[in-house]
Length: 399
Ligand code: UDP
Image (tube, rainbow, N blue to C red; front, top):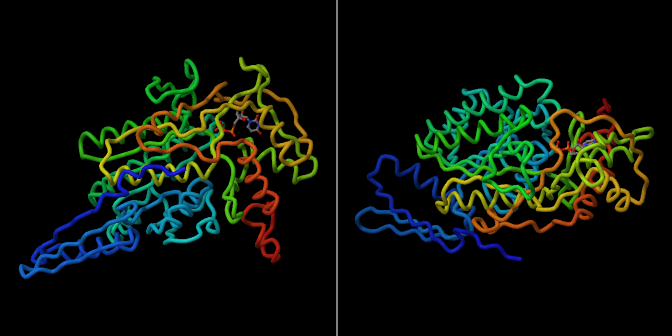
């Protein structure tokens, strides 16, 4: 199915006077755009004017992706590269993997380091940012809220500060369904009042408020994508989910099949849901990646700043996921029922109507079996995650 791209037919026409002191930079920037947009016509006239016409898919320039070595980030990076976009990945590799970044420019560093940020924005012609770098575990956030507020809020403020200083005013932010807390009903619409019930959700909501404040004060343009449960892997098998420790349901289920004696804990069977276990909306990682392309293109086409849910619109309980994984893998999943995990809301299912209407995005890989199958392919071929390939060569140890 083809999706309308807001800027697909829109030529970017720029007129630059060569007498303009900034002309060389502007031209360089436009030429970089040309690399990714594919078509250009360039005219010099006798008044030393240069007019560059850029016609292409996106009109997007160089993109900084913070946290691009993580599970979701690396799939976005891959998709951006496939679209021919120029990217710079900034990641401190605390939870991400160098091997997960399959191209572009990689810089190892922390988003809290203003010196590195200033260098990056000073050297590169960045015109938009995808901000993914964050701590993202609900349970962990209830145990160490300060870490979450520091990494997800304080450091994010530094990033915004440096961006604005360098006049970079387009940002796609990875937010979360955790901002909703216990929604009054499902599917959840974006205008439901947010009431996060864990520090992780709080940090995401606070950052959204910061974005709004910077929009009003400084003309920042943002799209905040509230992810529901990212799952699956790129079908080409090069990248996938590799967390240490792994706490997410689908990889935990699949890993249990690859390690003798592991059982999947079912956190709570007494929720007010049909089978007593929590219900979530699992969205294929490829659909998430595609939504970022749509968001970037929309920002460059001048859409208003917006918050969108990013989900499949279907809910599956923990027990349904285990059943589906059993069907896909042809194996019985060993489970153990245990107490509730702090901070878990019973049901989170997205309404994706708004993003469909405004950005033309809709999920293409919505079948649960497909999601689990691609994840299974990755885990089966990488039982030790990204270390699997080096383990084969005998240079790394499983810890
Ligand atoms: N879950 C579970 N056992 C696990 C991991 C997760 O029962 O080993 C449950 C968890 O309590 C939640 C759902 O599965 O209700 C999805 O959890 P996950 O950590 O994958 O994502 P979250 O919704 O917390 O972002």
